[in-house]
Image (cartoon, rainbow, N blue to C red; front, top):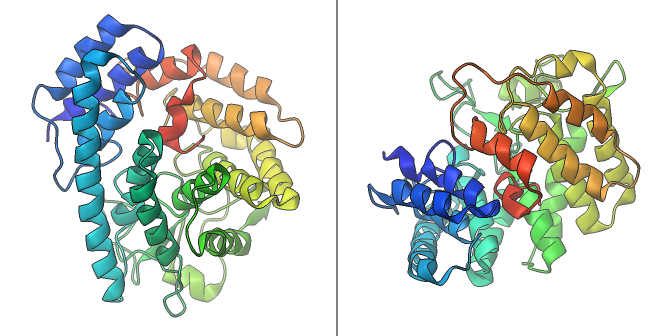
Length: 356
């Protein structure tokens, strides 16, 4: 796999930084690096790799010299999306459980939906939304997004699989995309029903500890039957898995449905997170995925839509004083490109995080 065409940790992410901040020479150099080994439309292609990743990046520029590349990567994205939709439909028709990479933001159809939304391909985007509606349909005692695999790639799955709550790999990614498209006016049959199914699931698993509101990262079949999560306290307050991303998805859903009660609860959950020193101490890097940059990007979007003030200065100060690691990588999700994007611009680049 050629890492240059990775939006997560390759040259594609660096190109996005330079296009969004107006440094065209550096952007073109990064694009040359990103495409030097070809552009994938294979099974690994996704929002964060291959043709869809480059299509997302190139949507940041209207330079005539890149028109052919924009068209080619858009076509590649459509090819990937159609193939993945066909496979997902067959899986559902056979009443099998999904792997989260089928539907998630990082590798799955939710991420491809993000690219299609950015490209304005509403016809194919609606097919992704139709799939997400089907994904939320219950399968016996389990929700349709219950995964047969485990949350950790290098560890065996728990008996009976798991349900994932995170924005990056869990059901709040589909929730955010469904909410954003509903706000856009791009809708399908069952759209609000799907949003409500996910929202009720989040309500059922909401936790309250010492004045904080949070959700578990995952639950197992044992947790489901017991009716309580084995996770007893909130973990790292990251965009990818923690309360910040989950709260933003719920805020978006509440806005789409004009549900001010749910919106206030989502904003309170976020505020209790960023005012909890025990949670903030768990952030040990500056990156988008796991660190202070991701928290700040999420905080800005929540604050901009909030019904009540969010203490954004707390997060700004936390990020400002975060110390770079000795060997901080250059990439978007875990490295300097993501940190610089948060610092340098407020454009819609963070659509790749499903924040806007």
